Amino acid sequence: MTGPRLAMGYRVAVASTTPPTLPDPRASQWSRRALVGAAVVMAAVLVTTAWLGYASARDASRLVARGQAEALLDQIRRQLRAINRDATAEELEAVRAELADRGVRYLAIVEPRDGHRPGERPTLIEAGTPAVPVEPPPRFPVGRRGGPPLMVSEAGGRLRVISPLPGGRRRDVPPAIVIELESSAAREVSDAARRSLITSGIGAALLVLGALAAARWLAARDREAQARARERHLASLGEMSAVLAHELKNPLASLKGNAQLVAEIVDGPTRERADVVVDEAVRLERLANGLLDFVRTGNLRKQPVEPAALARAAADEVDGARIDVDAGAAPATWSMDPDRMRQVLVNVMRNAIEASPPDARVSARVWSERGALRIAVRDRGPGIPAGEEQAIFEPFRTSKTRGTGLGLAVARRIVELHGGEIRAARGDDGVGAVIDVKVPG
Figure 1 (cartoon, one colour):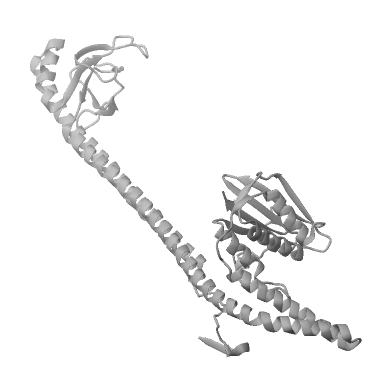
Figure 2 (spheres, rainbow, N blue to C red):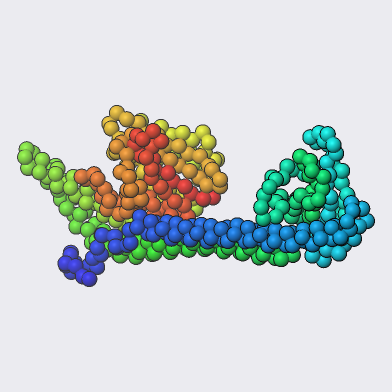
């Protein structure tokens, strides 16, 4: 829109100094966190469900194998009774070979010796090769109804079943039949459950990774939207500021000059009033120059510069007696525009001096780190309120009664023209603020 008429009959394009309304960054951040959290919960439910299914399938696999083992034991007992005497190893091998297609890989009759001691190998009649050595048979409970008990366990990837051998001599530890089998039906059930578990795990991982990728994409989109809005805002501010600054400079120069002449030829209260006019004219002139600095971009005139000398020169221009410059780790030279970067340091150091108590000192450190020049200026003032670390670089944001709010905004614009970044933070000990300038090589 257009604004009021100014000197020389021009109309000025007036832009609002209020930044465009954007979604609350904290709300966007919580939305992204909620997205990732929901994905993690869904992945956990998926994996838990798959694990429970896998555990149930394993139990079902054991039941299938156990049922198969019981059927095999009944058939083996019938064949041993048909022999009607103690079976030899050859006869036992014939029985095992007959049942090999049903998964039987090992068959043995175990009979402990009289006076058997723990750890002593029992008497074995074997057919096939056991997965692990066979230990003495356990003590089976006597008098159980419903058939002889079974001892079922895993042995080297096989299912091992031990059952007392009926018809043996009565003793504390009766003879036993030991079989080891590989059940194809049980293995198929277990393998299917394992594949389902792996698939669910991969799906859960992809779900979480997808949510993380989506959250990062949304964060990048929000940053890009904020950057575009900020650029549009700065462009409109720049257009307004450039016109205002140019329109104000000539009337201000005339006003200041005439006020200075009046102050020289009068005395008393009139001179005091003329000095006030001069001071206010100087302040408005500084504002106009700040506006021009803010909108001025142009091409950088980069050249090799000594960062240490540049920092010391800026400190001397502001107040060399109150600024300590530590440039012991500074690089010998750095490629940058010396005039524009000096303006950055002067603005930052002046801001630090004004924020600090009159008797406090300001420190500036210059060093290089990971291919970038770093300059950190620390004041001893009240510090930066939480959440205002980036807002202080916005134009016209100031807490000073006579400040323009353009010093740090100009500094950020120049640093960004160099491809760098400028950040603000509280001091490590909670005192004051630190402005950190980073310029790539």
